[in-house]
Image (tube, rainbow, N blue to C red):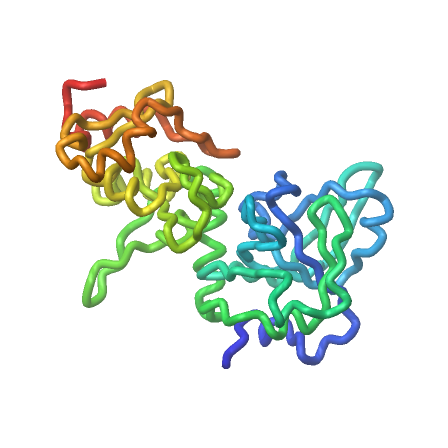
Length: 296
């Protein structure tokens, strides 16, 4: 089995480093600027003293309503540290964003070591074996720079991306967009609150094919469960400027479907911690996607 970032950092050989998991749900100032190689943490003096140059950390997001379960987005190595009476500022060497986030469950066998320690403020101290035994993240080193480039581009407000054409058209950066949108919504459907990762999708408000300049904009995405993703994509539901959910009258034609979803008609959307839906994109959806064009 390949171990991607394990080989990248030489973890099998590095016995001097400390290893940490940092929870973005609590350390909510962390954003995609991590991959521009700077990281700021809000820690106590005692916690700050534990970090040193050469330490390795994972960046994850705790899944709400699931005890000790995280989605891991990437890793980094600490190059330098500074603290001048405020937050801890880290310069990150060798950032390693995961192409596909990995689910981490602390009570499962491969995390079951005595050195799994919750230090508070969203920081968890790990053992080296935690990282070595982590399931493969499907990344590979030759795509890291492209991934970082796209994440930096999004962080700087540039959401334009071209398709990559080979034997078929590839949506370049789609996985980065999806990870960002799902994370902003706390890994929950913005309508139902469903948090099972297999049922969550980052839905574009203004379709990918319609505007290259908005493709990677997190404000052009909503985290929805599969049923509502399909309903939104096909125009059976839309969202008004007050973030209220609007149903097409056609949904009531299917009595079984209507019984399942009717409770959400007129409900307020659960807004994300960052990048709420852009009102211009929502207007486009109502005017061009929603099948009841004259209904607001």
